[in-house]
Structures are given as C-alpha cells and as structure tokens.
Image 1 (cartoon, rainbow, N blue to C red):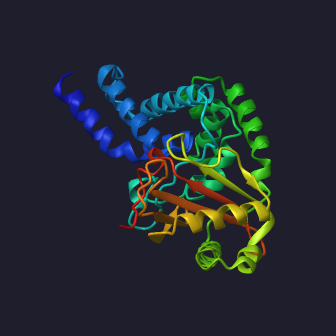
Image 2: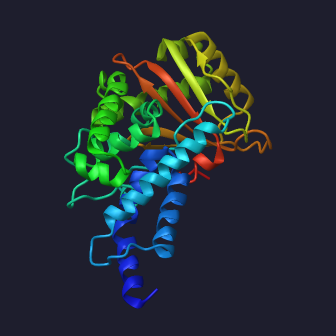
Length: 315
C-alpha cells in the first residue's frame, strides 16, 4: 500500500472510528462486539481498500461495518445462549460520552426519528432484539443516523423498495416500544436513581414492607450471567418471587461497594462483592425500569464479564 493510501486510511480511522463504534454497538447491543467489528472493518479497509481514494471513505466503511454486524447477529441468533441475553451497558456521563457517541455536524443529535441518547437506552436496545438483522440495520440508518432511502440501500446492498418495506416492518415491530416515552430526561433520571437507591437501602435493611412497596405487582427480573457465573436462567416474575430472590441474595452476599453510574442514559448501580466465590460474579451492574408511580417494573442484572468491559467499578 502506497503512502497516500496509508494516510487516507489513517485519516478515515481518526474521523470515523467513533461513528462506526456507535453504529456497531447499536447493531449488536454489545460493546465488546462493537470493538471487534470496528477493528475488522479497518482490517478489511487495509487488506482490500476501495479503489478510489478521492471519494469520502465513510460510506464504504459504513457498508462494511453494517454488513459485518448483520452477519454477526445472524451467527449469534443461531448459537445457543445460556440464560437471558441482555445488552452490555456503557457509561454515558459527560466524561465518558465522547468515547462512544458519534458527533454529527457538531451535535449529539441527528435529524432521525430517535435521539442518539435514546438510541443507546436499554429500552431501545432491548426492543431492537425483536427485529431481524436487516430490519435493525435499516431502522438505525434511517431513524437514528438520518440516512435517506438511497443511502440506506447503497450501504446495505438492498433495493430502494426493499429498504422501504423493511423499514415499514421494523417500525411496526417497534410500535410497542413507541407507546411509552423512553427519553432519559433529567427528571426521569432522578426518578430512576431514587427508585434504585431506595430499593438497595431497603434490601440492606431487610425491610420487607419497604421492598414490597417499591415493586410493582407484575415486576420481572432478568439476569445475564453469560454461562460464566451463576444466574437465574429464566426471568423471575411477580413481586413476591422477585422480593424473595433479592432478599436471599443480599443475605448471602452483602454488597462490598456500590456506586451510581449513568449507564445508557439512566442511573444504574455498579456493584462489587468481596467474597471471592469462583462461581459467583464479583462485579455486577443493576438497573431498573419504573412505572408512572415510580414502582420498579423490571430489574436487569448483568453479570457476564464480557458485557462489563466498559464499566468503571468501585474498588
């Protein structure tokens, strides 16, 4: 590879790495997979670079990254996963945000249907799991990154009518998500933080009435141990079962340290334990969803170590 081509790829890497990472993370819901896919995209550029170095490289890089992501999703869905699969959390506070959020035209929002912050929210990433890989790609390009039908078709190797049909089906599949406002406003963040703090405090005190009052009747708990650590393999449904589960866990494993982090736009707890059991996770992330009365409707506990690569934990 000659010197102009090397410089061309170096410039593209500096300019487009964050954008591609954000795209791959939203495509896969996994920070570790996004790291690998961005690296694979640039390896592909080095090994088989586009013929014309005078054209902007981003459209070519997006085409490679999104198709690698689609292939990755197809392989993942063919492979059995032990227990519940949850997205990997990422930090989105002011210090960490620039490392993960692409900046378009100097702003952190686009002209798309979904704000960039909303599109890394846990609710959004979980909703995307109901889409096919192609539906997911079309929805992200059209409704998050503001691509036109033609740009999306070029990036995905699809016809424009196929893009329109796939986009329509993707939006229809997201209808349930869109019935609720998921934007992580400051007021919503405060409510989530308060609910989590009260829940953990009540658990530590084994205050059963307080725990019960914080949980909705139909609350559900999801745990993702990735087959590495012991975790509930199926969702736990109902206030009494969830309350019993977390009360027993707290009795057996007192929390060593816990810090509130802004993860995927909302507060979540980064927790460490000090007992050192080989089959039990020493670090976890716990987050919640709440209803209009600030009762917890869902708890997500991520234990799988490859899902926690981007989280700072208390010592």
